[in-house]
Image: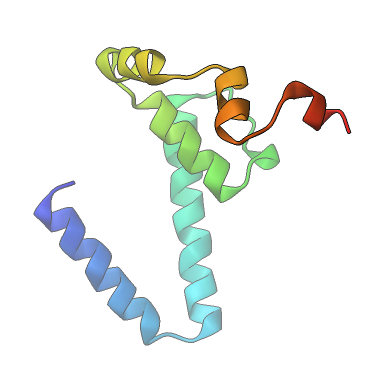
Amino acid sequence: MSETQKQNILDVANIMRKLSNIETKAIKELAEKMIDAKLLSMAPDAILENMDVTEKLMLIDELTLTDEQREQERKEAISFEQALQEAGLTADDLQD
């Protein structure tokens, strides 16, 4: 993230603190429309009505990964069984 982008985020946060709930809601809705437009430019067949903001942001992250980043994620991935074991669970625990 560039220094300019960081400063813009700080400026927007400071501005938002000075606005009413109605005004901040309008800005949030505008930002969501901008995210929708960005997503549709990246994935024209995306069905945005079924997605909340978090899912949309996660999809943008996924769509912007480089091949190297995807490979690194694959290398670092653990199996479902390993995740259960780290949580102190077994597959049988999930069936109860």
